[in-house]
Image (spheres, rainbow, N blue to C red):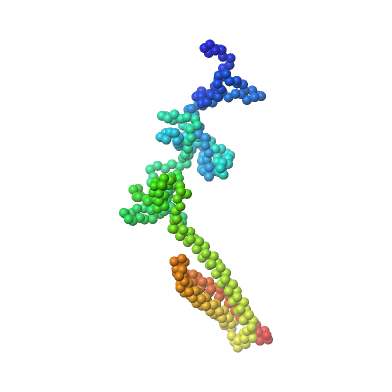
Length: 363
């Protein structure tokens, strides 16, 4: 076979019909055929440009929500105005570790595109559409705050009046979020104050307003919330310690009453011989134990009032505030003391009431 005046010894036929992307040999370069003993020389790279694939990776957090056949929207940096659609065709069964993250390779078949020329090697991002909503009310997700399992936004109600409003949200794409309830179309939702500070200073000093590391902001409200949780932890800790302390005190009162019963065995025998009932003996020792607890509680209240009074005289109100006695805590403490007093006196009193008068007089 000849081409022009040149004799051609071998004709290599392309396995596909497409475009040449890269030529790897020049005229005069030696080439070897593919055999079972050697790898052949690659002559060129070809592609069918009407059947393009997007190859990328998905984080393990999101891969569980994907399924083959889902629609995809592809954005290409070199073609910002092009609307490119595709279909998810492959999700790898095995992930790979990259930069301390587990990623799963995926493949997306690019659907035919009119009006734009796609080229192999373009950098692109793909957005897999898991669920789609249309004609819904949306707001930027940065305007939403989450506090105590509530979703809040700040709404402008007048020239100098704002309102903290709870809303119910739906779908989110990480940039905008659907509002299901709590807002009406046309209402003005304000940026959080911190975001406004970042935006104004970022424009003035030329840094990215979304870079939180570029500017340190002291949020007193956040610190107040953190200290609130911290002091709540202290309150719970001291409540547990106080409960154990009162319980130990109750055990002490019970031991004292057992000793009292043993020391007054003869008295119990005389009263029973003169006609005292078991109920009267029971109430006598139960009342005595409760009087001991009441006396201790009264002493504790006096000491607490004295400590609070002395602390109020120390000039530290700006740091720790003015100390007070909480009525709620006092009520819970008194209820716990009453319960401990009953338990501490009941068992020794029952022991005294069940003693045999004869044995008591003999002792």
